[in-house]
Length: 103
Image (cartoon, rainbow, N blue to C red; front, side):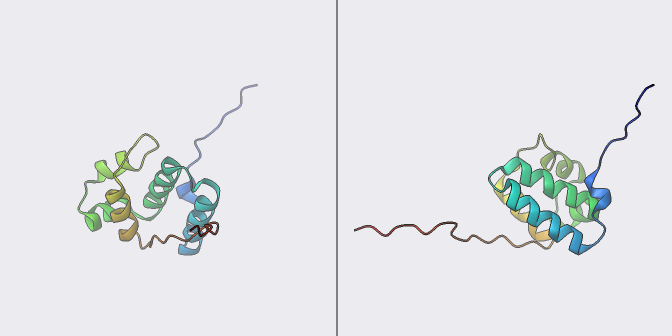
């Protein structure tokens, strides 16, 4: 007996903005130290929304976005910011642990 499998595509399960927000929150909590993981997740969200529209919004080519946001892509931080903003995300930094004051 052979087992048949199908490819899993997370983008098919991101139906609402709430789904997307929860997904990206989980990504940042689980893999926030791994830039490739974050970029890949942005690619999944881009596919869930509409990669062609994102290309128009960012001024980048659809093919370039697919490549940059794939697991093998290595986009510049400027590209990540541009894509994130076009998708309605805002990057913020917060201190994880208090830094001791010296001197």
